[in-house]
Length: 294
Image (cartoon, rainbow, N blue to C red):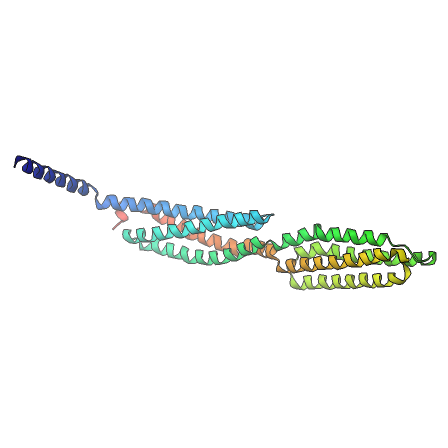
């Protein structure tokens, strides 16, 4: 009986202690904690926005596919953290009754939505790296094919001494035509204007036509023993022009040039607008104290 009474008395004291401890957590303490957490989240939003922008810029400026992909992935992670911070901050501001701050957050959310839409477009373009891939074709297999083409033409011999000058002139034309296409490749890759690229492509086509006409004209004036070299030159020309077509298609996509232009133009303005909203939110929260809570 005594033991039961003792247990009842013990539980009564524990209940009083728990109620007293709960009473120590005042509404002011809760409001202060929410205000502190709101300030932390607002600050982190600005940090994550900076991380997002920096990572996206690295993706745009990357000189390898792996680096571009890594930058895009980091930007995506920062954007996800921003969404998480906003989801945590919005109810905290509502519980505090901070209407003006909530409006600032909503303003940032609208601007960030527009920012994200543009950023996804930029990152998709950056990861494609079409201009870089076109450049690699120009400096790699296309250059090698052009060298092989010149080597095959240099091995040609005339069918008679009287045709020597004729063969040399046609070989020079055939070589110069391909070199003209090579010279146009780099400007085409760097060009952003469609009309300008169309003009370069027309000049490339004219140069190809001149090269093929020269090869056809060489057929009757080269020695029989040199005809395999002429056939090789024709085959290599076909390979070079196929590579040039791939290069032009990649260059036309212009993902690197377009992503850089968007980053330096529209994105800079949207980033500044997002930063403005977050700075205003931070300033408003910095002025808040317990007297400003409800």
